Image 1 (cartoon, rainbow, N blue to C red):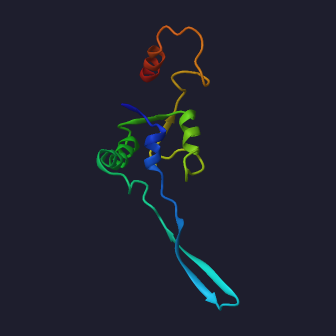
Image 2: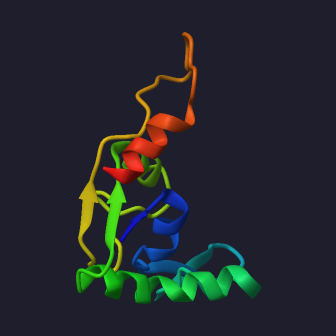
Image 3: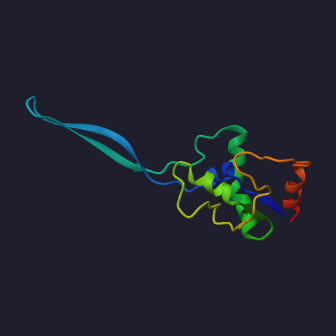
Length: 134
């Protein structure tokens, strides 16, 4: 069984990275020489913490899907276009997409195109169908 992993799925599978959060501002000195120091604390935001409802339930299932892929019951497919989109996400990690440590099979895109598809296309669904069956 195969499943295509796109950017929206990978977005919720990213590892949370530590960030700095403003804590408070300390004021020092006197009226002649006022000074202030901003204090920060490290925190690790959860990638799915703000999700609610059905989207949250779907995001919570992703580790289980990764487990199926890790055991070989599911093959995850991805292509270069997804990698390019993934690298544009905020806090994306180097080395390309990661899906909870599950193996990802890199494949060619079902259609070769630039920003616009030109020329006669008799059946746009056929290349996609052929790709899914390969």
